[in-house]
Image (cartoon, rainbow, N blue to C red; front, top):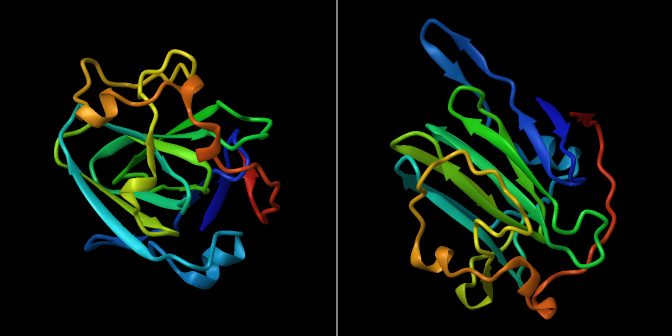
Length: 194
């Protein structure tokens, strides 16, 4: 397994070791010791799957209290996955990183608590998987409008299909500060910067 840093410290790309031959392939999508050795949390409480058509954007979502760390991957299809740093006091506050995740590269993205998360679906029939470090609490959820001009995310879809909730998300500058978590530095092992 290879772990790569992104431009946002704490947001990690994980490339699992894939064993393949003429019959197909095998790889571990999660292994507690190996993932905790690279600095990921040891407690995961919920696994989710979503199925989406091409052109859908989901996000940008976060929740607090009960902030969630997420380990996301694509089982079928392709997405452009985005994490936005919304931790108060972070030197990267308001910055985002986008990564292509698909069933060919088999990459995973770890998004720590305190980041908003969203993704654009680039192929029909995409199955998106994510593990969460805390339970979903709809009463604590915040949605940032996906096309906020202050964030300037370059989504790779034209005429996106967006839910009512996401199209009516809060502008980034209007996020309630009492709903955001404080930035804390954290160390991590064995990453190669990209």
